[in-house]
Length: 63
Image (cartoon, rainbow, N blue to C red):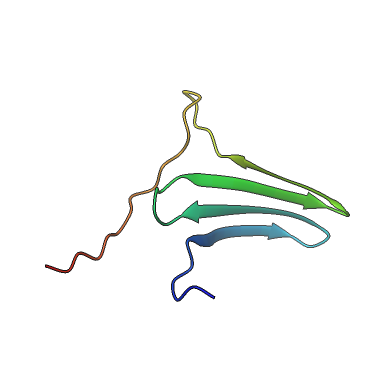
């Protein structure tokens, strides 16, 4: 298993029907995950302009 996980859950709502937002820590792209019963889906989270929502990425540079 990888030492550092690439995706981080930043928001979660619900019990049986769950909506979550996950952030890719390498690219900053936000993803919307929704599940209800046995069905689920994952899609990039889009802003008003139709472009993916991108969070700032913290980089650990050694040098």
